[in-house]
Image (cartoon, rainbow, N blue to C red):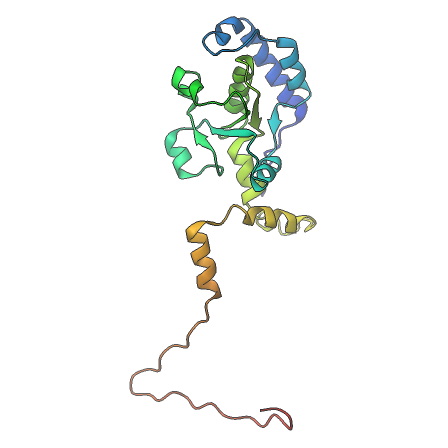
Amino acid sequence: MKVDLQLSGKALAAGATLFLGVLLAFSSVLAQGGGAGPVNAASIAEVIVAEADHVTPEEMAQWLIEERDDYQLVDIRSPWQYDDYHIPTAINIPLQVLFEADGIQRLSRGKKVVVYGLGAGHSAQAQMLLAMKGFDAYSVRAGISAWWAEIMTPLSLWDEDMDPAGYQRARQIRMQFMGGPAGEAAKTEAAAPVAPPPPAAGKKPARRNKLNLGRGCS
């Protein structure tokens, strides 16, 4: 059974707005040391309500395929989780150190900063904190779990009765991220001709009978 990772826009906006209200109580503290200008709470709230503060997994995949260089992708999970699997091109700055001096210095103010975690919660919170520090910040909607479900998992594994419309497009996108030395070696191995097994000891290879295929055939 497919696990529905898509959260409703209203639920995301409501939760984000509530969290924003808490942050506004100490927004001036958040801006200190980050080189940010005054926090424009109204503008941030408008972005959240309009759901313009996130990037969908499919949009992220398209950005990667196009090799865009106007954004910085940041994985805020633990180092072992990042090492186990991460979205291509992402750098790892765990949430615990993201807002420390060393973490902030690794972020680019000249680009979009796109963060993601396991799901929607921490990455959405980190995105808002970064926005309040003056970054052009976004989050990957529903995190790496949605990336894996929507980009890396074949549609045919979810439901055998699923409408096949669109599966070829999804497959083309998925194959863009399944390369690398191991993947190329597997493709080469699969394409190589398979030699027949050697005859058993003491036995002669079976003779191939020539069939009478008729005139014009051999």
